[in-house]
Length: 158
Image (cartoon, rainbow, N blue to C red; front, side, top):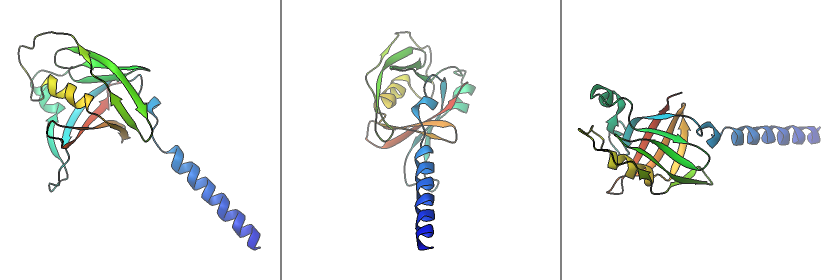
């Protein structure tokens, strides 16, 4: 009987390990989708655990609803800043690490700027070092110019 209990325990552990491994997000769930920036959060120890730097609702009120988008294909990232289109290479590695290399962008002049400047958005993307899917949203962990942790939260536009 002890042998049956041991086999049952090993079987249960195997099932748990397979379930845990399969629950990690796959980059295929991110690739070839259009994403819109919804929020930029500065990670701090405030009462709510986050300070919001950027919110799409304010961007939309300012008349910039189609800006700050993102799309990954098999080799590069692309999208629309504000107002320029951009693209650049990226690489993935273990533990959801991402490296977005310097990007190229068109050179259109913006008549006005929203609360998040395009150059800040590009800098956040180029400093991103980790990605994750949280409740259907793409999160890129990055840093600001002072080295503080920042999270870019994108929602699927599909």
